[in-house]
Image (tube, rainbow, N blue to C red; front, side):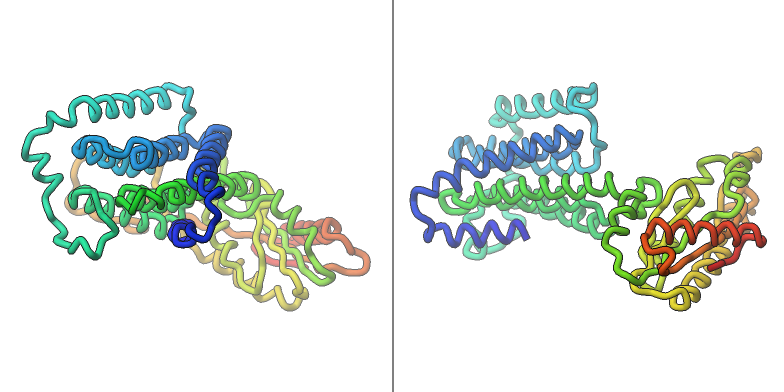
Length: 395
């Protein structure tokens, strides 16, 4: 959307008073990059910091330093596309750490090599850069100036990032995907480079938006289970109406399970249970309350309306069989043709485990008017469920 807005903005530029052109073309892109860079440094998002540097270099090469030697410019954008793609897969590290220094040094070496040795490339590489691989008429392109080989690489890397964005639902992948397209637009050679400042500004806004979304997730989403956290629950309770039901859930014998199988398996159990709770029906909104406890809020629902949905959830979790690797067995590493390819229940290296949950729920009443009181009532119902044998629901 931000890239589309950039193209719309350039089409409307002629309607803007001339006095505003300098502000739009000079000041706003610099300010947007600076704000995005400060936020990325503040929140230790070094990948975004480097991405913004790539965008700034691309923008300057098309505006302030337009007219570089063609081979140098071609190699510059090869490096920008390649590094943007690679950095999307790296982990965020502090810019002042050894990792940040190493990455910065690696990029400086690249820049030095491009600036000093671009004209010394072998002829086969120069021929490949300048070859017409796409065979697309120039009339269909907007003053395209990059060789086809670079355009093909940029499109392939953008497609890979797009697929990863969809599959993993990642804001980081989405940001790098959008900025990769932005780099392609910056390098397209649009008339008089008028589009460049708008694309730089649009990509900077992408980074700012991504940082804000990720920061919100850090504050309001549980890192292990990916469910909204207790802080998010407290915020949600403030907006409830006069009619609602709250359920408290607890994994049965979780401490014993943790001690027997280890915390790693315990974490897997928490994630499995959370994934089932996340798909609760009946309009319920799940949260991780803390430890092995979860909360589900049903706005506008009575006890009778939520009971069947909670019972279905309990049954789904009870029936689910987790397959885990045996950690206390000595596994023979010798090849075994007979057992090769066996997995899950049929593989002696693995065992299946199942867990159950107890649920207590309560509805807002005259006596329990505030959400905190309803949660206490649901917690008391949960205690009764545990006392009566666990793996059941009580209201």
